[in-house]
Image 1: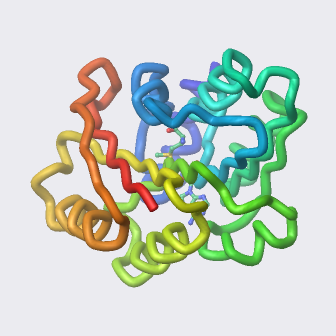
Image 2: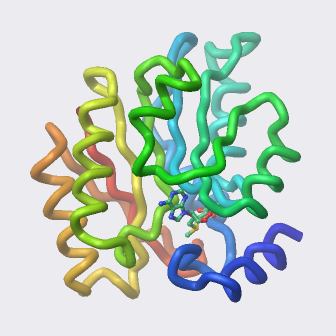
Amino acid sequence: MHTMYFLSRFLRNPVKVASVVPSSKHLANAMLKDVNLQPGDSVLEYGPGTGSFTQQIVNSVRHSAFRGGRLRYLGIERDPGFREVVMGRFPDLDFHLGDVLDQRRLIEEYRLPRPRLIISGLPFVSIPQDITLDILHTARDLLVPGGFFRAFSYLHAWPTPGAFRLRKWMDEIFDSFELNGPIALNVPPAFVLSGRA
Ligand SMILES: C[S@@+](CC[C@H](N)C(=O)[O-])C[C@H]1O[C@@H](n2cnc3c(N)ncnc32)[C@H](O)[C@@H]1O
């Protein structure tokens, strides 16, 4: 059901949605690998779409020391249809309808403590360079020390200038940078990019 809905949003806005189907649980797993959220941590998600990564965040919290605690989370989604879907799936979480460019103001407005994880579903390759840089620098400033920034990059886009720039900028902006993948079982296969503050 999420797949058909995702496809319909893609057909309306291919540049902003950038993928025909939601990310798989294989990619979602890899995006959360080694993060080990603890009680008191908070999570900021860019572009949750229909909630593939959100579900994995909720699962990892359910099976950890977090158990019983309340997950502090904010998702920022610019598509009203996707926001409706995730609000229905995760009624206990906050989803703001708006643009990631406003992340600094939004985490104050929602009183979200500085995140330990910022997880991105954004199609960085199709986002203008100055905006991508602004988002990455702000994410670096917002994270707690040792916090994680996770993004993905599709295998087919790997050699393009946009994907190369994203890797280079993440390497320069974060204290450490790692690649994981490709996650071959995702459609399309994708690498996970991990920056650490
Ligand atoms: C490739 S989809 C990924 C969705 C989901 N995270 C997944 O992996 O299945 C990109 C998502 O980012 C959202 N998006 C794109 N640009 C955005 C922006 N500037 N601010 C907030 N959301 C944005 C789109 O509406 C869409 O939901």
